[in-house]
Length: 432
Image 1 (cartoon, one colour):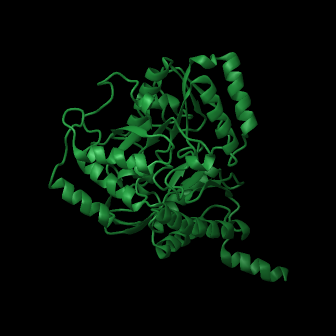
Image 2 (tube, rainbow, N blue to C red):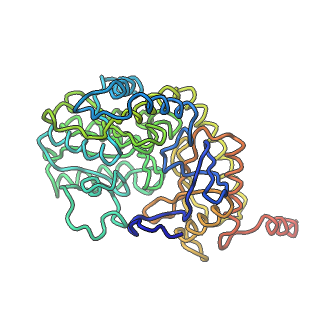
Image 3 (cartoon, rainbow, N blue to C red):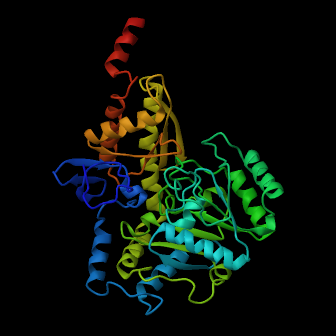
């Protein structure tokens, strides 16, 4: 499908236009029905058009649509800030600024870290993703397609291997790389901040090693380095709890939030310790649309709906169904291209390995096409785009979740080298 007047530099995964959605189901302009396992790339943890959110937004539109908070404050911004203080599980009082997007939150976190420390150097991680704006781009641990042909980017930024039990780098290797960095490239007292995702999004849903996270927290405390935790994709319930960082046994100095924060409306935030958030001179933080009143109305409802009990119930239910299907697919021997399962809770990825028939990237690209034809929308990730990331709404009805996984299995059967269930049964009979 061609999109007139749209830049060819915008990559589109699925060539269709959706017209309406309800929870985990969408319909395109031709009336075709799909189960949505993309969720706006993690934006719709509460599904399309959650009725409570729709009601709150509708009421807000009839009252006040917008006021630029740094010109004339409005109550919605203040209430979101107060709700975040209760919603984010840290031991200190939270100070925040609201932004339009995760990338904007990242950019402002860099400003805060520089102002607070008087330093400029940033440390980020291989395969991380923190946004598409110019300074955020340099934090991303992947060149293609984000940094290609752009020349020098704002810095200095240094990248480290990402230690994860979902990968081949452990905590000791990552710490050794960090120590080498301080010996060879940059003095530790010139580092303003370290930014890391507790579960990488674009990087393939890999979990940060908890032992490394604790050692990193200790290092930042000893050297006055700001630790920025990016939960733009993993936060607001994606893993089955409010945020992923408590699983690591640490707290951030600054926390980046976005995506599902306002259930589909553009809202994000950078929040953290008051002394840090106050370090930028007055007037240095703000934005015309940041903290829009309608988006704030949605965010207040999102935080009310995401109680710990509900998130645990939704996340556990979804995790059980994903694990059940994945284990069946792996043990049946029909899908040799299926690799490891990554992630945690309801935030799961499936690695596609190379086989004699195709590379993992080719397998996943074919799967996306076949799944779309079967009525299921999926999204790739990973450095080599060979990791399927599963992002169905947490509120997906169990019967819809099962049907989506069944459609995924039917799509797997079309891949090169896949063995049909009928063929497997015949082989088993002949062996007996």
